Structure formats: C-alpha cells, structure tokens
Image 1: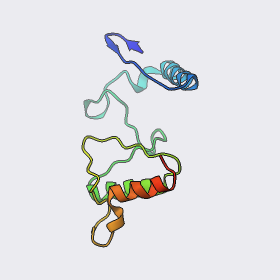
Image 2: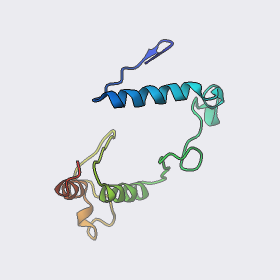
Image 3: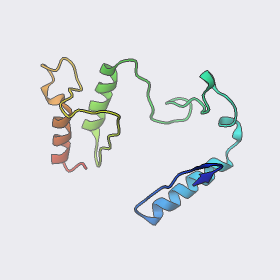
Length: 120
C-alpha cells in the first residue's frame, strides 16, 4: 500500500485475507475526509476513537491495576487464540493484586492454563 511518500507491505497467509484488506482499504478511501483531514484534539492527526465513538474495543486506563485486571480477564475468557503485543513483558508478571492472594494470576500461569485448554 502506497500513499504519497509512505509505503507499507502487508503480508497475509490466505487470499481471503488479501480480499479483506483490500476491501477495508477501499472502504476507508470512500469515507468522507472529515475524519482524517483536519486537526483534532491535542493536535492529533487522527479522530478520537473508543468504545463509544466508533464501536472499537480500545479502552483507556489510568493505572496498571485496572489494565492488568482487564488483561487477566481477557486471557481467561479467550476461546481460540491470545495475541500479545507490547513494548516489554515479563512472564513472571502478576496481573492481579495482591499477588499473594492471586498466585494463579501470573502471566505465565494464565497462558499455560489456556494452552492446556487448546487456546493458541
């Protein structure tokens, strides 16, 4: 995908995913430009997004305790796969506090339990 001087290569494993990407990109190009073509709050190039504005699953957290609780719940609720992307992540991280009362909430323990259930 190329736009002006920027270019990005998207790799997928199936032709159906290629069709999904092409459809999503074309759909974005047909939307009115108001969403992306003028400055937004705090000088951002992108419009505000969140659970209310665009039905996305993005959430804001003020501290780690609330975020880690949601992460632990999401891992426990996973049915088919878990994808983790982060700047830094330690497998010995306890996701629930106090850790003495929630020993099974350690990230590696949660992931191991889900792997035993067949979750990728």
